[in-house]
Amino acid sequence: MDDITAPPRLTRLAFHGPLSEDRAAGMVRRLASAAGPTAPTTVLDLGCGWGELMLRLLEAMPGASGVGVDLNEEDLARGRANAEGRGLAERVHFVQESAAGTSRDPADLVLCLGASHALSEARPPEHTAAALHSLRSLVTPGGRVLLGEGFWQRPPAPGELAAMWPDASASEFHHLGDLADLAVAAGFRPAWIETASNDEWEEFESAYRSDVEEWLATHPGHPLAEETRDRVDRHRDRWLRGWRGVLGMAYLTLVPVA
Image (cartoon, rainbow, N blue to C red; front, side):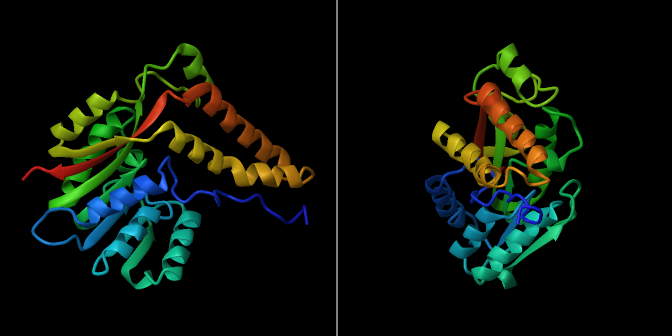
């Protein structure tokens, strides 16, 4: 019934970011066989959401265990359910806590995908450098960090900035080259640099809204419809008139310098 059926949330997304199945599979292959004194046995996922990439890594590394931390309990519950369904519940823990100043032990593989803001209270773009220094302390010698971080594909025009999120600024993100330099300055070597394609962005942005758009089409009189419609329309408009083709997502596989 309209009065009890709540709008769905992100059910069409495998990953909470512009990441294709093919790219994710390549990441898992590389990270699961990362060079080092021993095979990776521990994974730490910071700002994990439902931790899909971490779960796929654990499937590829039968002897490994993982911890995902996030503040969103709904996403964590989804991760726990997915882990249970794949027989991974005994090897992974999803914990509701802040990643900033975490006391978690260093791990062989550390994931931080679109979540560097969770590691620092600094304002953008300074939070990126602070996050990289935190990540350097959280990876074991010979381990790997996978950082997913936004960057400007080109300088945004004033009209594009005005169409983005409130208070969007041209200084909010780095150039890709500057992002790589920050990683080096934090004590890493960038072993692999790749960026999300336009197709990955369009699939992500469409999947981000798709289930809610269909819900709105079938529940126009729902008590939550007006609020939900305003939110979804605003997000779509900001994407199409603001960051589409301007904001990029870089995936950096980082090796700590000995």
